[in-house]
Image (spheres, rainbow, N blue to C red):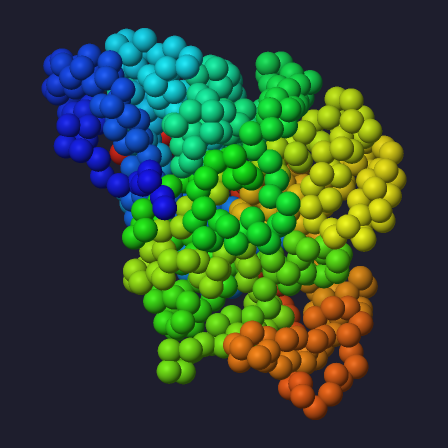
Length: 596
């Protein structure tokens, strides 16, 4: 069962945050009421625990991570698209097609993700100040663990702000009358600060299962902190859009050499420690996730924790259920899916393929029982998220309560491979890539698909290109791809290539010439599970009368073109604009760059 939840906390803890977030100058000139309480609260581990837990609460707000950031950020990529993209003129679709307006009606509100992230940062700042001033937070102490958690949660908010908006205001102290209105800071300043903060946090928090505080993936642990620091080091040194164009940072402190060294050292520390590891089976890992197994020490490093009646991960991304049925009381899922080319880019023997790409939905139930039903070629679902794999029956109207995985061990291995390749060459990267691929292929395929394949990657360029492809096979459906494409300087290039590939699939030309146009299906003995012939390349022979034929609708031009708006260069729109409500309320301190 899940223990840590994003909920509203006790009145005394809420009072700390509320008293420090008033924006009245008269109030801010007076001594903050919370300062009278901090010496008591942050010197007591139990009370401080409630305050640090409260840093997470803004994530659960409707217009925050729960209902806006998680469902909409990270689209569209060369592997994933949101099905609102082809809804011409819709406020949701606008968010995906690299044409977002600052007055977007989904986002332009005072309680949106931007505001909630800064609310979380303010809570973290109060906790960090209180723990430093009154808690004596040393390694191997409860208060030390809490300071490490607060530093890490603040870094999470900042990382998400910067990947969505680029340069943002830097607030590393609680708000005062002098800092109510501040301009954007260089993201380089923020990256350097949070990378430094995570170095400190890693000395304070325990490894998974090392202490009672780190037995759950809903709590911050050392493996996650180090892995997250490695991710941020790669991002900070990578390509990204600045007001003067797309390039790497010019700050010598964020050079590839320095940042990749940090990333590689952190990843190797996690791998060597052994307290986190791959699940031997890709499918078993995702089944365990949907079963809400939150025990630390496996593949998931940290998850955004949602209460049972809060959070919309499956509500948004699960294989679609058209009605209440035997698996869910919530007729939802399926707002997004993998591009139709992704299934055919996989090796047919890759065990990740059929977990990741699902060509069916659950039809409208008859007498409460639903069957799987084939969809069109342009509509695939993320099979990593499935109501039918849950052990809890979801009855909420619009929330499923399943956590959002923020980072898993597979990413640690791929970061290690990428950094080792750059710093030490492809031979140093090979063991990490082999570990990922070993899990993906059965034993009889590993000589050809793992050993021979990886050993043939003898140049840095070949290894890098293989890592880019492996990232696709491993992470499609987790909305990590956009950030990776940006830092590799491949966003626009790969999106253009994705459109070309879909046109080839539409016409059954090029590398998709052998993809069938007709599927054949029957139901297995349970009378709900599809047995499909014709999904694999070259499966064109009618398997017999026991199967029904299904003409696979072609991809249509308007759907292909909806990947990004025609005439827009995605590399000129890597970020969302700051929403107009925050521009208007900034006392002329905030402006939008990038041509918005």
